[in-house]
Amino acid sequence: MDKFIIQKSSLKGEIKIGGSKNASLPIMAATLLTDEECRISGVPGLVDVRTMIKILEVLGKDIDFDKGVLTIKSKNKRNYVTPYRLVRTMRASFCVLGPLLARRKKAKVSLPGGCVIGVRPVNLHIKGLKELGAKITIQEGYCIAEAKRLRGKHIFLGGPFGSSVLATANVLMAAVLAKGETIIEYAACEPEISDLALFLKRMGARIEGEGTPLIRVKGVSSLGGADFKVIADRIEAGTFIAVSLATHSNLIISGANPFHLTSVIEVARKMGANIEYKDSKIYVRPKRVLNPVNITTLPYPGFPTDLQAQFMVCLCLAGGLSLVTEKIYPDRFMHVAELNRMGAHIQRSGPYAIIEGRRKLFGAEVMASDLRASAALVAAGLVAEGKTEILRIYHIDRGYERLEDKLKVLGAKIKREEQ
Ligand code: EPU
Image (cartoon, rainbow, N blue to C red; front, side, top):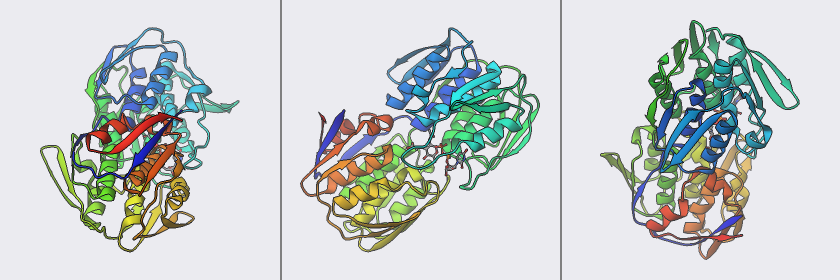
């Protein structure tokens, strides 16, 4: 297991954003809907992508992954079982359920269980697929789904925390091969869902309304192969905006779509950053003392929960009190205790965190708990006095490709060592 050793750094320069993890994973799962070859480019070389490759291989795909390009062919299409040993390492594995069911009429996928950011149920996935006509049972920790032919339906997919990204992906992937019309109401509007819909359309699916809460699908009898490039990772881009603000560094973030980051740019501007964008480059120039702000995480186009931890680091340094309200995962605050160990003053109560700004952070040995919390600790380490050691950084490798190399190019003092 590796760790990062980080010293206070001032950064400068341009950073190129990679392809989106959360767009790549469901798009990879969607290749189960066809036996024809698919070519997906711009895919980041992450641990989670490699896990999805292993899952697709178990399910009978033959995969080549070279320089961000996945070539996915079919070799044996009989298997429909996705084992616990793979699903437990990555919850997104559950989104093979919809395409397996639609194409192979049967799916047995391990239930993912809880994780460090909360309970994370899958009831909406199951509800949506049942409404399309699947017979679903839970046996020995597995979700077993069967249907001779799914049938289109008007489905309300909202839950207590609003829309669900991967439930929308699962139901959408099942609906494209269902008989008749499906309407998904309260669909997730995230750009990753729009990207999935574009890929499915490239395969021959008939979909309208992606990117809005009402998606309309007209089922087709089969889908073909497709050649596709995934969108840039808005969360990686937003993480670099947070790093820029925390370290008072002028950064140019290239390759990301600023229109996928409107709520984030709005918050950064309120904090006093000057942000402009032109020709797929985002120019971030933060001011010396950041303004405190209140942030509420919400489904897209609201402020993403996946950037809450990274922006909390900036709020620790701002000139006053800030309030963070976590409306997607009320328990996603594992970073709070670690930031407090570095000198932050954050009080958490339920889904709220009150952050007292004007703090100086100090290096410490800290523990990475989940992907985004780990990225927050990296940002904190870059601004803290002295040395920060971040243990268990395998979480970072799940979602950030060569993070330390990208930061080094900007002048960061960061190195990876064996723990
Ligand atoms: N929810 C339910 N029932 C369900 C599904 C979800 O109540 O059946 C609840 C969740 O507990 C949560 C809310 O709905 O309160 C939204 O969760 P969602 O289902 O949208 O999350 P997800 O699809 O499992 C994706 C991302 C997460 C990201 C969330 C929210 C992928 C692979 N994962 O998860 O990304 O935090 O959407 O935007 O796309 C990450 O990249 O670090 C990460 C955790």
